[in-house]
Structures are given as structure tokens and as C-alpha cells.
Image 1: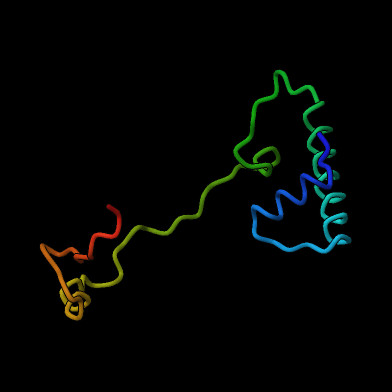
Image 2: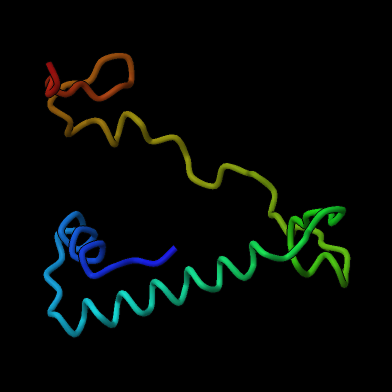
Length: 99
């Protein structure tokens, strides 16, 4: 797959970007280079290869270092909602914006 200058112009328009002609050409070259790398990777035969969750897992055991899930802040719902214009059963009430 290769992008044309028109493709880059359309993408820039959708992203609300204003690219100068030299920037657009540089962007086209970079994106097409990326597509070349992706095509080369897709050409590799990976049948029989088990996917890894993490690349380091191939050389050492991975254990996640997670801290205990402990509440460290007190529940201050009432204090936080004191300045709200409207609250009902612990929830902020806001005006309906979608009809």
C-alpha cells in the first residue's frame, strides 16, 4: 500500500492540519516507509509461533510488581459535593444537553 499526495491532503484535512507542500511530501515519505516496514513484517511466516504477552518473557520469567489495592484517601463525597448546585443520592445532577 502506498499513499499519494491526494491521500495525505485528505488525511491532513480530516485532522484539521495545514501542511506546507514540503511537509506533506515528507509526511508521505515517512508514512509510506512505515507501510513498507509493516508489509515486510506481514511477509514473515509465523505459523506455529506462540504469541508472547511481553517480549522479555522469552528470556526471563515476568512477574508483575503490583502494590496492594488499598484505599488511601478517606471518603469525602459530602465535602466534595457541598459546592455543587444540585446533588441527589450522592450523584451530581447536571442539565440535559442531548435531546
